[in-house]
Image (cartoon, rainbow, N blue to C red):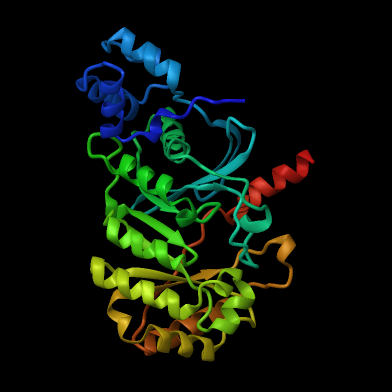
Length: 354
């Protein structure tokens, strides 16, 4: 079956160019853009004052709503987890989190994931397809509509591209998504309020640096040496840590922007003092430009070989890094009562429907 693509997949310039190709005025793109992102209509017919022929043309070729809310769970801490059904029936997750600095949304970029990290729920289902830029943008729009309906005047202020899938394995759509949500005439989410996470696709890290999208970059490292990283992340068989660090050096030199190394703590696997010392040595003279984000492990039934590191050991790992002059933090947990780990809600729904 052929589905109409989401209009959210077009930047304002792309929308203007498409309309002009169809013989319509460029200025109509500005009108449509404001209705989409400022007024946030959900049907082209609601765009009053826009040329009717233009609206009929858009409705013929595009959809505004391609995601259907399948399930929504709300945590006691205010986290909201959405399970959306795509037009082809696939399910994806999106999570809204409340912070002191604002409202952050974690978006998904793929249906399934081929990276296959041994501790991650998202990789339990192999990738079946990439999401389009429009499907990624629409996750933000649906969360914003949820906020609008509450009537409190709240808005999405931050985005983390850390949901299901490897964003850099869907690079073009991910990059176009960023261009859309950054647009100051639309959602106007600042580049420095957007963080993209990758498992370490070295060539794409360099491309990301060259594209200068000015967003934050986080790299899932999770181990300080090849032997250990290969054991828990199969991507390390193809891209060794030396290649990854080379890409990191390129990124730092090209952008002069700090980056984050994500490190999930697995009990008696990668959480000992010697691992912290080895990690500090690996970071080396990059210390001023790197922050290590320590992540408490969220247990997954299918990955029962891993256990959560005790709080005392988390603190010891943190303290060891700090004593070595490494900037580090411990990720705050959100929605622990609603299976906050990526992929858990979707996986449980699929099991329930099997």
